[in-house]
Amino acid sequence: MIYVAGIALFLALLLGPGLWVKYVLKKYSEPEDRYRGTGAELARHLLDKHGLQSVTVEQTDSGDHYDPIKKSVRLSAANHSGRSLTAITVAAHEVGHAVQDQKNYAPLKWRTRLVRSTGPVQKTGAAVLILSPFLGIVTRVPALSLITFAAGMLTLGITVIVHLVTLPTEFDASFNRALPMLDQHRILKKVDRPHARRILSAAALTYVSASMMSLLNIARWIAILRR
Image (cartoon, rainbow, N blue to C red; front, side, top):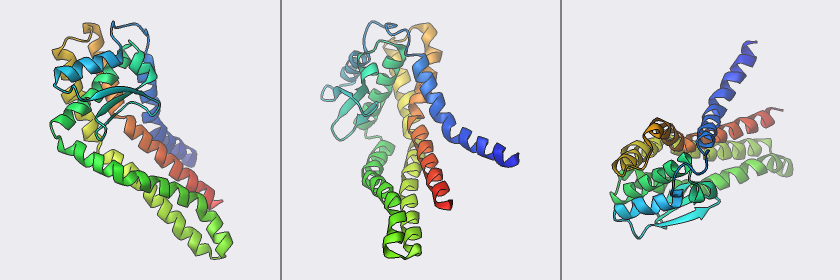
């Protein structure tokens, strides 16, 4: 019974943030025509107001994010063309990152370097994990499988740590940049402000939820190895 409860708690800790983020973003994506302008239009408006005319606004299939290398705010289709509270709030959050970049916000610079350096590492780690069982069979050296598996786990774990360490950057983009912008330009309907705060929290926790899923993948690999 304690074992089952432990597993349930473990899964709740791993899956909880992701489920909450999805719930909040979906909840306030309706009604779809809550605001007159789209997320893309709001992003463009806020960028121009802050002297960031050179920053582009693009639609993407890779999730909402700001690319500090290409200087581009990228929004998912629903948030790029949508007029919901979620669409405009998420757009403001990503503009918040662009403002951080403009101000040479040091934590964003550090995160950019970390993400760029750990991206290839994560892919390598995933490949190593896939190959580790076969290496032991082919070489007939079981220890080699364990070593490569440990290396793969370490590389995936590094990605989790990066997301957690850079979490303050996300909250700064939400509550020190996006929310003041939404207030200053009187974008939000008064009744929507508390809900926008929840969306901004969810936007800030997006990478945390991704990290938790990475931990779940690590746990899955451990379970496979023990069989």
